[in-house]
Image (cartoon, rainbow, N blue to C red; front, top):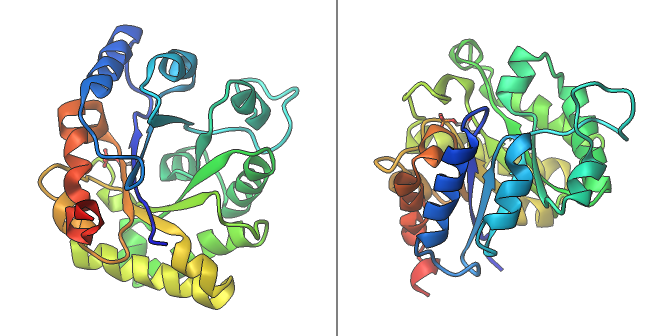
Length: 257
Ligand SMILES: O=C(CO)COP(=O)(O)O
């Protein structure tokens, strides 16, 4: 079985209640292909999770943007995996570079979070990616492998994980990775899974790309054999553009049967 194309919209820390309602109603009105060929997940800020969950079309799913590393308790400001499960939220994004870099989340901490969220039944979009400095010094693969290794140290079942390769230098900058650059890292990550987990994990894990994806560049990126979808930031708030990512599955051929 092939890897189902995955399109995630990460709304980050954006939106008012009114704006969110508008986005949801536009998403609900759009025509999309069957869930057999594409999986669509949108990730609003925590406070809008119930609203989105209760009003979004049933063929799209919802992700939280983070959750606490273990069971809830005296952790002011945090949201636990249990709470997300209680709200029936199926997905969570963990290890986004904005949290790694701005909030000092270490590789180990992210690994612990992924393991805990999975143990509670959540599905995880786990993010990895190098900074510009790391790319320029030639350590891209070393960095993303260490980030992935820290998850692999705690996780053996990857069935509910989507790995998002998001080069930091491409996030919100308009500087998208070229399709060749994305394919190179995705294919090396797949080789990493082959060497460090199992051939089955390597063949089935979805590795999606994020970083300045737009309607103009998504088709070429999606045509690469190891690009299994996108995690879209800014453009996911412009719903008309978000829909452009869905037919970008064409190049894989599966769309057309
Ligand atoms: O961080 C991202 C998705 O998680 C990408 O953001 P942009 O699409 O705005 O560059």
